[in-house]
Amino acid sequence: MLEKTGIPTQADIDSVFPCEKRLSLGSVAVIECYQSIPCDPCATACPRGAILPFVDIKLACGDATSGIVCRCNDLTVEDIRDYIAQGYHSIDEIKRVTRLGMGQCQGRNCIPIVMNELSRALGIPVAELEPANFRPSIKSIKLGQLAAYGGDLND
Image 1: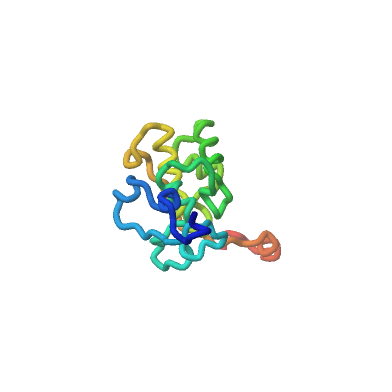
Image 2 (image 1 turned 90 degrees about the vertical axis):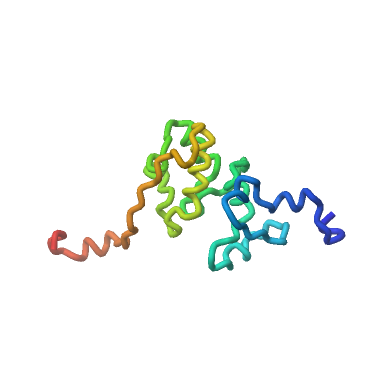
């Protein structure tokens, strides 16, 4: 209907509108675009991070069956659910095997989604889950630079 008339159906609106759980957390910016745009310009253009990409809205509500959870390390919902099923029951455990939260965003996007997945799978409220340990990122160094150094690395 939307493509033919420009008028969204209730299903179109529901596809981009956050769930009650997300609405209860506070103000939400809702985009009027109903199409999944590969570059997601609204989500990336908002300087305050108030607009979530479409799939993230569903992930934040815990009702997504697929999608990318961690863009920095290419982890999907299925990957996270598999790790939880294998016995990884904390953010730090999942972080150690997947590098979750160690990319450019430092977990700002993926950690809350994984906390929701852990909460749902373990039947524990998010507030009672152990939070992730955050460590400052370090600057990487190439092995060639170390080899070329030739001095004592303890200097």
